Length: 484
Picture (cartoon, rainbow, N blue to C red):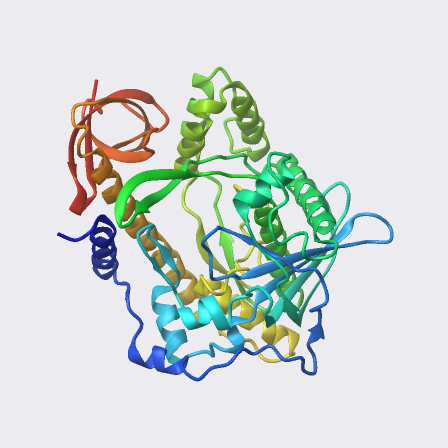
């Protein structure tokens, strides 16, 4: 009998194959990386920024480090933020075996039981990862942040950087919030503590300004399996903090800078968009149930005002409301944006110009964008034709949706294993999906979704119900409930 971890890994591989993914790297891709060396030596055209107090902040167990950040004070006030992005293109050339595999899968898949990287680990966790105390080539995105959170002058260029401290979200977040000690590694880098506080202040200003313009305050519950010697013990919730917000807000700003940079250079790009929600009337109904009136036409600023109010009034159930709103907003997608086009924008982030450029180790769209950026910097012809970009955008959108299904299946299989001994128990739940295909609910502890097999009539997304666990089927990730 395989261990729970091995059991879930088998489910993950099977689910990937069923959805057209390649869980293993082909021999040609593995052979390609055998003799590679880091592309990090200073050369003509690359700035040497290794002396700055760069640091990375990521999950505790992350080994594929895509970005570093640092702050520099500005003479007239505010700061300049520099975000260094791993130069993956320096070692992964277009149409090489590694690139071909990446173009098929398009994303790293995080299943909880196992990570299936887009790039071979010798690249993503070593040669193209911005590892601590290693010189690495990078694309640097620089932008000025004023005290009011507005973004001023910006620039994009290539450089050599050196990660001075590999830090993690939980410990940095607790420290920034005054709830924990200074994390190890920060005292070893002169000035890094002050620099991180400057970064935090700039990120908070960026966030506040975006939310004033309608960026949505949303807080979902994310959980991943916890194993002990291969045995599944729990599904642990991942907590948000000032550290996660710091990186998120810097990445949003950096991706906007890159989008505008490419537009100014006359290059087509792949944009990340969330359209104006078609299910806005259902969002209006949700607000009405709470005694709040939203406009009949989609209005991000009004929606954000209601979300902020509900978070203050009922913080315990705010993740449930957030999940309902996210479901009703609709999926994000990749599209091509041609020079002079009218960008659709990202409704949830309240930004008009937005690409994906900050995670080239993990997402193919970001690697493609990096190649376009480097072509623009070198004043070369476009790295891809418009037809190629349109096809890549469509492929990445479809593969992202498929990857989420794989990750969700493994998560539900783990949840079904945990719940298999609790048949007949009752739980408070919220409706997370309601369509002709069925009605789904999510219970709070453990935070898992299941199908409502009985009593679903008349329910809509966001409704709260009391349910009883009927049945679990771990191999298929089935969790079935009945309405009480």
